[in-house]
Image (cartoon, rainbow over all chains, first blue to last red; front, top):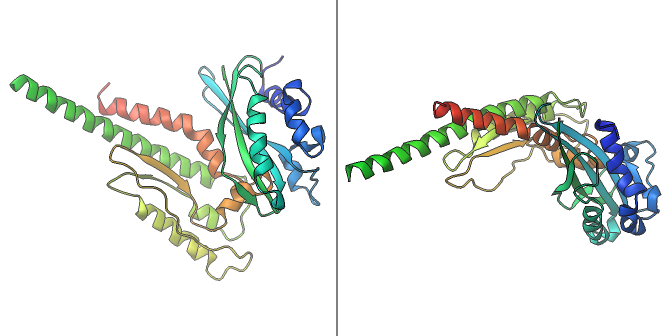
Length: 139
Length: 153
């Protein structure tokens, strides 16, 4: 596997969309693998929102200097309908964490770095919560 | 006893120098974080309140940084005065008090819609969180370097 930002992102994304490790997550999502999307799809006009709950991936910063530890950041945004509250979202969080054993992405280590507040996306009128992942590797 | 007194005095001096270095490093880090956040292209902006109201500052038990926050508040308020492009307003925010041995870096915008910018459409226009995430390693390095300089190493 080539190690570059895209290959890391692809590996992280696939873990929930197609890999066996993500099967318990997909079982809870509204449309299985179709409810695993890139976050930019949420902003399309009209919005392209698959069945809820859904998870939407947004890549973040890559920090660290070349000769030191690199940290690749990104987050799954877990969305559900207002009427559902956070019950299904909060139930998904440990399933997402379990789908990422520390060696899920080659040549580094991945872990859940932060779980965001329960909040409302006022643009979409949906409740959501962010699950940030951090992938560490050298070079 | 004289030796013990000298040792204790030396430890006090060491603590003061470390804290001074931590503070200098955190202040330098906050300055860089603010610059980065103000230069973001994550959003375009309408009134200018978010960009000019973006502020990063250091808070301690002795100085809560309210002067810096107030400056940002006034800057945002100027942009939003009479602005009708959206219904957002300036907002005063509060965070927990820093303890006696704590140095806190705060990056924020004093508006009631900054939270929406950070959240809407899966964080499409977010820049506060990403700036902190992206700058954390660099700020840590700045702080470590400032402590080393303070200790003369």
